Image 1 (tube, each protein chain N blue to C red):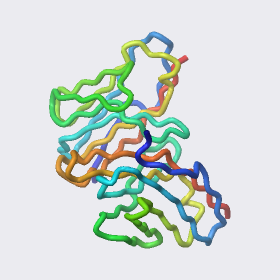
Image 2 (cartoon, chains in turn orange, cyan; image 1 turned 90 degrees about the vertical axis):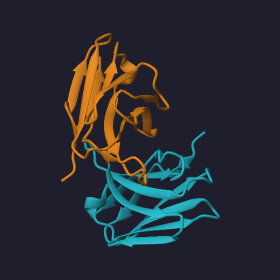
Image 3 (cartoon, chains in turn cyan, purple; image 1 turned 120 degrees about the horizontal axis):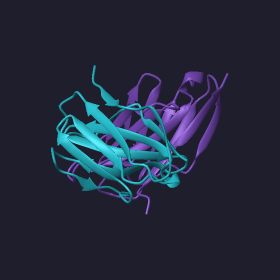
Length: 113
Length: 113
């Protein structure tokens, strides 16, 4: 059974704290993605990666960075969390050259106070 | 500019009746379309897809219709069940252009018993 695992389901952080969200996939997928989901705004792409050590900005990269040191692991970093980064964060992966179908993790609900 | 739009943020349907969720797109390069279903506090899960070479794809109670000339697709759920209550996201990709998915804003479906 294919799996995308996000390290934390729920986090509460204070403004200015550094936040790490980790994601691991066991499907040997080349592509990995970080989205955030906010009511009425759908899924917005933050960053994605086509390969180890590669990263590309998505639609809303400001305030975020990512790290992909291993094929199966893709981390999202908030260097200095702000209240407008309170959101549901979703990690996903996919095969390169496929239909684009994404496999999602269960999500990480981040609250920044 | 939203390339994929779901103009109805919510839809309420009686159990046993048909649910019709709509999606419009503007990019004529899109040639593969997917629907995802998302329960609260969970990641989206793939529901059904359709290639642009077809105008209909059916899987059990779920049918997706594609009207390329109108750049419109719809998801039909018949009969609707209370367990279908979720947020539904429409997504599109251009197979020859990196396979990146572009998501709509989502429609919250509520099926009343």
